[in-house]
Amino acid sequence: MRSRGSVAALALLLPVAALAACAPSNNSSSSPSASASSCEKSQLPLLNNGTLTIGTDSPAYEPWFSKNDPTNGKGYESAVAYAVAKQLGFSHDEVTWVKVPFNNSYKPGAKNFDFDINQISITPARAKVVDFSDGYYAASQAVIALKGDPAASASSIADLKGLKLGAQTGTTSLTAIRDVIQPDQQPAVFQNTNAAKQALLNHQVDAILADLPTAFYISAVEIPGSTIVGQFQPETGQQEEFGMLFEQGSGLVPCVNQALATLKSNGTLAALEKKWLSDVVNVPTLQ
Image 1 (cartoon, rainbow, N blue to C red):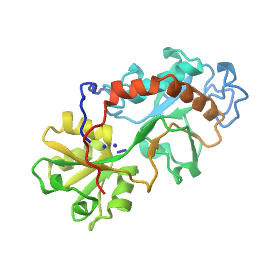
Image 2 (cartoon, rainbow, N blue to C red):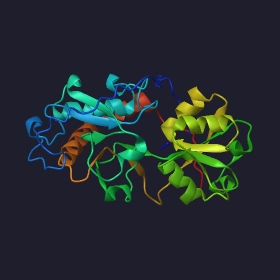
Image 3 (cartoon, helix red, strand yellow):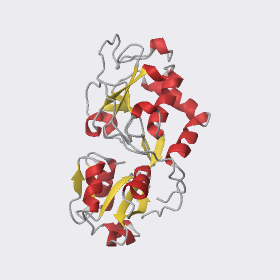
């Protein structure tokens, strides 16, 4: 899990379904680690000629994706991926998605995608073995608890120390529990967000952590009896950002960064964030 507090509009959050994950055809003529001599579509160092191959996990969660279908262009990350693809010269049907478990995405080695987009925080440790684009979303961590439970009344990081907390394995949420909250007992580690939510409902944990947009969706749609206790930044003094992930040495990175810069300057990223993630208001900051 990789988000934060009270939102005005969650109507933008849509349901989920089955991921159409396709293995790459592996008819590549150029290595993804080659350098792009230009950002012309024909010059891009792609996994497969003429196709932009994008990875993400399954399930692909709301509000980042919609109906567990990254191909529909709905949800913030699906929409951003297609906007970047368009900037690079790819039509919708020239984009192929592959399934990449979150924990595998940032392991060193060759990749079966041109880039992966899946709420992957840019961290120095991960950047040692993979490459990242510039950030496309600034995230913070959010604490989710059931209304009426003691965890729901926490108003500081110190108030969380005595609680049983949980998060998905391999995420910055789990790192935030260990490094920032430093609870008295070991956190519960879950394979995915669904398992974490169920543990919260079963009172196996007092609270779970997720990135803020995900926390909005969990509290507003998936667990109506839950609440966002507060948000905080897990990295000292640094704004945590999500980036697209590439095989280390990928020549595609500067071209994607160029596309992101255009999408930022013309307001597209801001419009997509507003449409799919909504505005962040009145979420207490835990210190």
